[in-house]
Amino acid sequence: MPDDLFQQVLDAARALGVTGIEAIVSEETQALTRFANDAIHQNVCEQSTQLSVRPVIDGRTARATTNRLDGDGIRRVVAEAIAITRLTERDADLPPLAEPSEIEDVPRYFDSTARATPEDRAQAVAEAIHAVSSEGQTAAGIYSTGESRFALYNSRGVAASYRETMARFSITAMAGDSSGWAKASACDRRALDPVALARSAARKADGSRHPRELPAGRYTVILEPAAVLDLVGQMFMDFSGTALADGRSFLKDRVGRKLFGENITIHDDARHPLQSGAAFDAEGVPRRRLTLVDAGVVREIAWCRQAAALAGVPATGHGFPLPNEIGEAPMNIVIAGGDTSVEEMVAATSRGVLVTRLWYIREVDPYEKIFTGMTRDGTFLVEDGKVSAGVRNFRFNVGLLEMLSNVEALSRAVRASGEETFDMVAPAMKVRGFNFTEVTRF
Image (cartoon, rainbow, N blue to C red):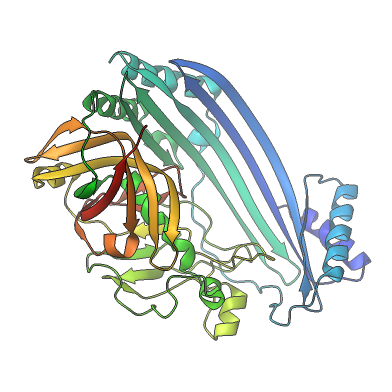
């Protein structure tokens, strides 16, 4: 956010008798190329800018947002935020605006991504479609590139900004009675290989043709990183001081206890080279690296400033924009990997199921973190150390405490992309006793 824009916010607030104010500007450009039935059918680009203003007045706060950044628009949104704030109930625990802190810059902006053209995406998509169609299959998916900037200022001197680029490629290869899928994301689009992803999806579609139907039951399962992300990623909103205080976290009375297997170690690390996002939170507090799980033991959780002050602990820099009902959560998850490849997991499995991805995941028991959902786009039978056939998709019912206590092997951790949760760094996992409850119709 340019200094003069915040100065206009500050001047408008002071004219109304308010000296404590925070402003966030979010700028985003997103370009998307979508394809289906082996042809591009949509190419769009959207640019947006929003100004969000939050005053603090005698223990009260509220927020108003606008996409009008002219003088009149700024004065209007400041006046609206102040009017709403004065009508809200006082919160005796509301912290004052944050003070400035030293914030480490994390370079995640790449011209190669920001300057990607529709022609660049179309060429990559055409090559990916050819890789699928040459196998007698049909391709569908998306290729997006974009850039974003997040800037936060407040009247106590905080001036923090961050910008990044992001590219995402996702493809589904469809055969007559089977499908395969692959997806990846990266700040630098040169790190993506759409053709390799397309070939992977095509191999899965080909390998799962004429799927067999297996009986429901408990199986040894090999979850690829995307499947690990979509399932394990469901639990991290509970690693929150606010969630603990509210009694809605499964970690209540469990921090410091061994809940998972000794081979499970998980960090929150905004500066990890495979991660993305700012190194500070929505109040301008630097994000601290957290050891969420150490050899199966829950060690640390995230704290926003208000929750931290109430608990008498330091804030960790994981707060969301105030006011909110969530408080905070770790958003840069890194699950430590091992040294066993998926191929080696398969070779060491006498009978099991290899899972590409999961979807339609819903929580069944919030305290034991039991989830149900389904497999899709590449589910395979493993027999005698080899992938022998595709299988009909399953519905599962799995508790994460049990699952993460039954992990027999871990692959190298990679940046994983899924459909259900935010991207994270995760390995593939070989898990015993994974509970499939029924065969699905899809």
